[in-house]
Image (cartoon, rainbow, N blue to C red; front, side, top):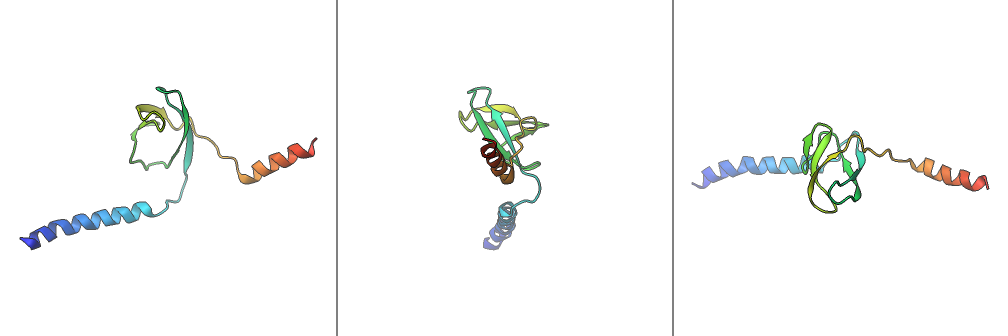
Length: 103
């Protein structure tokens, strides 16, 4: 009886441990940030995502069915068209230096 339980539980435990290890390893590749506006509450928030990796949203082509981070209601968001291009640190410091030199 005990050996039957061990035979059932051991593979399940192995799969859970391997999934935890796989998900804890940082993934190489593109990481995106989209600035989204909730259609229900009208608030804007930033959403960071990886292409092909989602556990908290339902993918519908370029749109995602997900819970708003502010009002916690489910809505459809177009994350592809709302991608924000991050400004590099060099560009940020260069812009402030140029504006002070011109005056």
